[in-house]
Image (tube, rainbow, N blue to C red; front, top):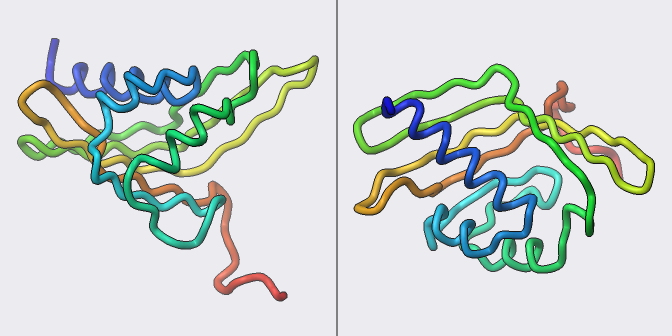
Length: 137
């Protein structure tokens, strides 16, 4: 397996753990000092894993919801033991007879450690042209 194939396989394992509520795999694939920006949650940086464990433990993706995700226009930049993956993330969920779609742009920074790769930083942004300023209150 090439390093590029290894990284994409790792990323899919990591993402799948988020949507299936697999806390053990999420913990094994994510650095404890994770930093992330999720524009749809808060306009501030979040640090650590506690927020995501809360979300995973409370089945944020929906109990029993069927899902698939697609990584549109995926790109991998590999610099030794550091990798940057970027793509448009499209999530499709089927729940109670409804199909919904959500998408956003996403970058994840990975580092190679002794036993594999870890996600250390995530940045998400809207997949549409956001206004230059905050909405009027």
